[in-house]
Length: 277
Image (tube, rainbow, N blue to C red; front, side, top):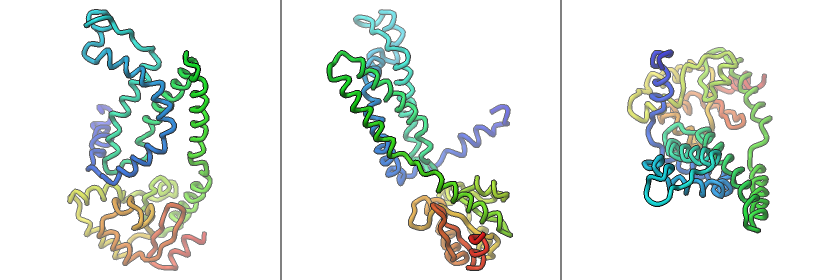
């Protein structure tokens, strides 16, 4: 924070204090179901550890370890499972952040790491347990995890091709462009002059007047707009205020689909020039 003159707090904290977006509840539910196989096996390894941590208690952690608390001292949990349990609790405590506007699947990265670590500990504990059913359950969970791998996206080649085609269309533009895919926009040599997510948030709070942008759209100051989906996709409606959506329908009526992206052009000639390269 000191090195950036307060920029770190402004960008990392200030710009991420967004309104609650309850539409993300469906997104959260889907993500939890998607990671269910990992979650079940992780609990096997982490529940006993969490129970020990609860027995110690946050306030009496040191007293219990020294035998100064009530009753017999509670043994400390093994170091690695304890760290994994604390890691999981920390990520779960931050999970409600996905409710805010602008949250995406990357909010589950740390949570997924914690779950994966717990899953491995759980399998090891089952396999080495005294119960005769332990190895069989461990094998079943291992198969479940292997099956879970088939749910993961594997076809990244198509997405890369889409971004390459998108970069070519942006590079061919003779005027500025506006794009939800800003990294590709920069790689194409264009400048990011409008970030829909930020202005959509400001518009929802009544802190931004879209009239100047609507005027520029009406004047066709931009070569094209690149959006993630269209009116049928929730993220499109959240990012682009109604006034902007109406202006795009009126002044950029020609649409071309490119994977998950929709390119909006002012006329057929502009679309052919960009897409036929």
